[in-house]
Image (cartoon, rainbow, N blue to C red; front, side, top):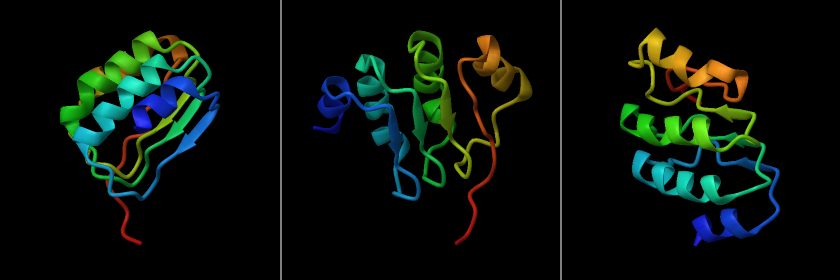
Length: 104
């Protein structure tokens, strides 16, 4: 349902921080993000997203030109190496903020 909403609404920003969002659900949301023509900023900070989401992150970074900002801080992505992070940030279309989850 949320994928259809993302694809069909005129959202510019989406914030789903601290929602216990899993890698599987995040990857499904990336399908909707890929179909949105208006979404420019997403915040998925402090969720449960891990390195298995890398393929979806890479696809969004590559094929969604209007998306300028994606906050992934506070997820379990610290195992991504510097080369991968640099690849995701090329063309300055995409910002990956890489940090461990914060307790709050």
